[in-house]
Image (cartoon, rainbow over all chains, first blue to last red; front, side, top):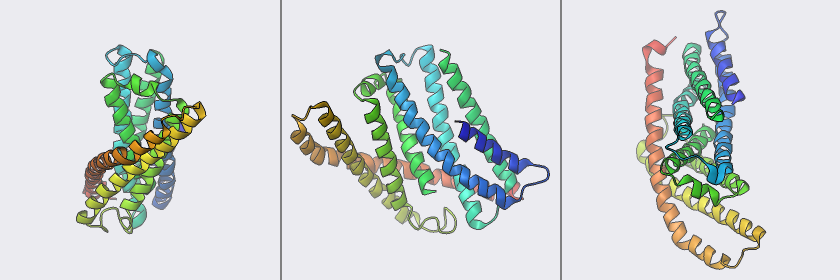
Length: 129
Length: 159
C-alpha cells in the first residue's frame, strides 16, 4: 500500500511542479510505477483473501456493520483496479508515441492517490471494528 | 502492459468473486475448506496462467499504441479461446495443488477417481467458464481502451 501511494504521489508531484520536470522523465517514472502498482495489487488481493480466510467461521456476516464496511472496501478495491487500467494504457500510449503529457499524467495519478487514501481509510475503519 | 492487464483480470475476478460470495453468505464455507498455503498457491497459479494467456491474446497488439494493431474480429475470438485455455490450465494447477495437499495429509485414497473427474467433466466445465470469463474481460478491456482513447483525444488534456 505504501508503494502504491508513494509512487502515485511522486508521479503526481513530478507532473504539477512549477519548474516542470521534463515530460519524458515523468513518463519514465510512470512506466516503472505501473509495474510496481500491478504487482502490489496482485499481492494485496492475494493476502487480502488470506486474511479473510484466517477469520474462519468467525467472519462477521455481510449484513453486520463490519460486513457493510468490508463490502464498501471490496467495491473500492475493484473500482481502483478498473479505473487504473486507462491510466496504465495512457502511460503505454505516451511512451509509445513519444508524446508525454505531464499535466494529464498528474491528473490521473492525483485520482489514483485520492482512491488509495480512501481505501487506506476504509482499512483503518475496518480494523477498528 | 501484458503484466498489468493479466494482473487486472486475475485480481478483478477474485475480488468480484469474493464480493459476491461474501454478500451471499457463501464465502465462509469456501474459505474454511482451504488452507492459507493452498489459497495463496491457487491465487498465484491463477495469476501466472492469466498473465500467460493475456500475453498470448495480446501478441502484436502493442506495437505502436494499444488500439492500432489488431482488428476486433481477430482480438475477440482470440480472447475467448485463450479464456477457455486459461480455464483448463488453471484447473490443471488446481489439480496439482490438491494432489500435493492430499499427499501431504496422507489422504490419497480417491486420487485416481479425482484425476479422472478433473480430466473430463472438470476440464470441459473449466473451458466453458473460461470462455465466458474471457469474453467478459474482452468487453471490459475494450470499454477501458475506448475510455482511454477518449481521454487522450480530449483537446483539454493536450499540452
